[in-house]
Image 1 (cartoon, helix red, strand yellow):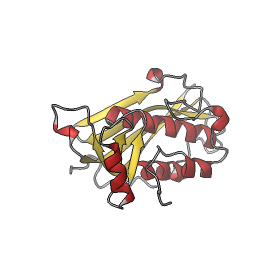
Image 2: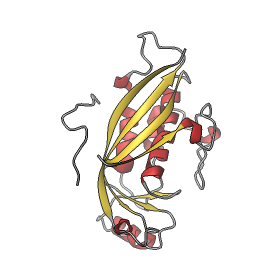
Image 3: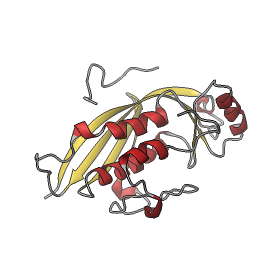
Image 4: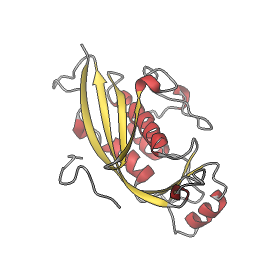
Length: 204
C-alpha cells in the first residue's frame, strides 16, 4: 500500500532573468513570490502513522529560502553574468547561478531534487518525493514528477550537469545539506502578485 501527504511551502520573493526570451519581457529582471507544493510518499507509515513529520521540514525550508528568498537567479550561460556578479560583489544583489538554466520548470526541478535528497535522508529512505508544483503566481505553475526525472526515483542523489551531487558526495547530515547544497553563487558570499494561499499558515 502506498501513502501520500502534501505540504505547501513559501519559497520567498525571487528575481529572475530569462535571457533567451528575446521576444518577451521575461528577458528583463523580474520577480515572483514563489510557492511550492510537495507530494511525499511512502509504503510504510512511521510510528505516528505519518508519511512525513511536517515539523521536521524546517531544514528543507531553510534550503529553499536560501536559494530563492530575496535572491537573483540567473542562468550560468547568461551573457550578462559578469555584470550580475559585479552587482553581487557590490552588495546590490544576492546572486544564485542556476547551472541548468532558469524558468519555472527548472525551479520546480531544482526543488524536486533538493526535497527528494532531504526527505530520503531524513526518513532513512522510507519516504520519497513524488511530485513538486511551483507557482509563479495564481495563473502560472510548473510540475515535476518522479516519472519525468532523468534518474529513477529510488536514487536519492540526482546528478546534474556541472554539479557533483553523486552519492559519493552526498551530504552526510541534514545540517551539511543546508550549508553546502544551494546552487552556485558568485564569489565572496556571506553566510507582485496575489497569493493564492493567502491567510494560510504552513506551520513551519
